View 1 (tube, rainbow, N blue to C red):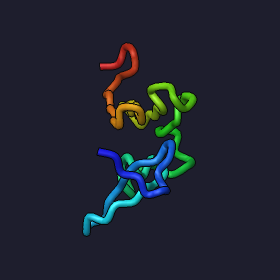
View 2 (view 1 turned 180 degrees about the vertical axis):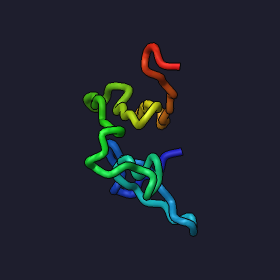
View 3 (view 1 turned 45 degrees about the vertical axis):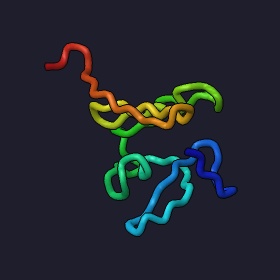
View 4 (view 1 turned 90 degrees about the horizontal axis):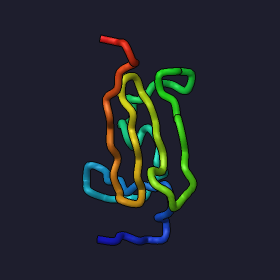
Length: 89
């Protein structure tokens, strides 16, 4: 399926409201985790670890607590991976 209305673009995600009306939004922590679920900008527990040039995959990596989130725009998916510090129980 391809949805194009002129506002689509790199690093955008298709979102919909409660009525099913969809629009293209910039990819952000809020679009991944939902409004109110992301620590503030001063929080050190959520870091953008890496960004890779367009056309490469994955496109972004973010870490929050014990989870790493990898966004791959090319295959339209996001994966979350739980991790622990070496030596932790």
